[in-house]
Structure formats: C-alpha cells, structure tokens
Image (cartoon, rainbow, N blue to C red; front, side):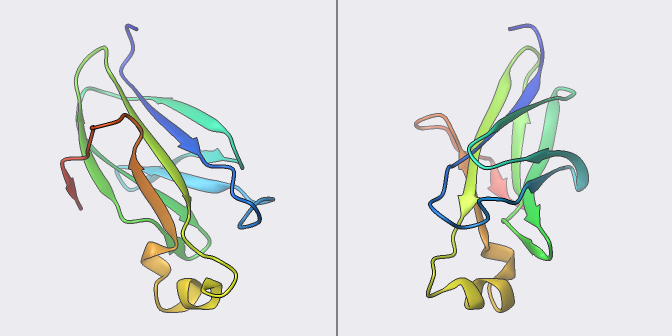
Amino acid sequence: MNETELIIQRSAALWQDRARKYQVLLDGKFVADIGHGQEVRIALQPGRHSVQMKIDWCTSPALQFDCAAGQAAAFMCGPNAKPFTALLYITLWKGQYLWLRPAQPGARSIAAA
C-alpha cells in the first residue's frame, strides 16, 4: 500500500437507515456518501485528521486520528437507534445517533474531538 487513505465501513443494520446514505465528514468537510453495508476509501494527506459521520441533523461524535504516509486509517460506523429509542436519538441525542469506531482490533483514535 503506497497511498495514505481513510477507509470507512458501514455496518449492515437490520432496519435503521437501510435505504439512506450517511455522509463522511473529513476535517469538517463532506468527502463521500456511504450506503448500507458499503465501504468507501478516501485518499488523504499524512498527518492528524478528524472524521465524523452525518445523516440529516444527526451525527456521530468526531474522532481525531493520525495517519502516516503509506498507511490507512480504518473505521466502522452504524446507527445507535433501536425501534424504541429512535425518537430520543433524533431529538435529545442527535450527536450520538451514529456510532463510529476504529476498525482494527486494538486500534483506537487519539481522542474524541
């Protein structure tokens, strides 16, 4: 692997947002859409970055990560809402509607932004 890239994998949830795409925000800017059960790869410059997922007015927490030249930073995402908690997540907990975490076992982001 010679490229520095961000890899996002979206879980295949049973019903939540199944027909809708999430937006990938890199350093606060939209860079890609990701559909149900899909993966996106985004080329990026080495260094410290932040990543966040968004759908409508709801988001995941933003995570900061370091990525060295020639390496990839991999994350997984999906919805937190369940049938009985969906209303709470779209109103009170809109910043926690989506989960986002490092994909590699044992890996972790530097800090929540």
